[in-house]
Length: 156
Image (cartoon, rainbow, N blue to C red; front, side):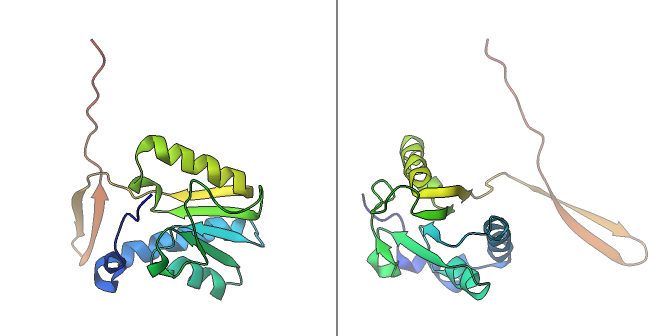
């Protein structure tokens, strides 16, 4: 298995933006709700989740194929070097979409094996959105992303 992205992918202006910060807040919120003692993050990217979780008192270890990212454990998600249930929670945030679907299912099975309580995943929302603005005469304007209508086709 080869690494999917180069370290330069995680540069501040390119990778870290307001939507990513908001996403990480939700990820951390989901993990904290489960009250874990040990968390494994698979595919830590630049290490932001681990840093934020640590600031909130949550112990996170990281696993990645790429030693350049300085994970705690350099290994494949398909063969994690841990016993069954070694971690309370196993997380994969914006990682599974880098794998072919069949391999993502294999990775998910391995994460389930290592997790004692839960597996928490996050995938990017790739849906197309149409910007819609509302303007109220007193000067208030709000822009809301609106999903386009879905087109469905039934088999013939």
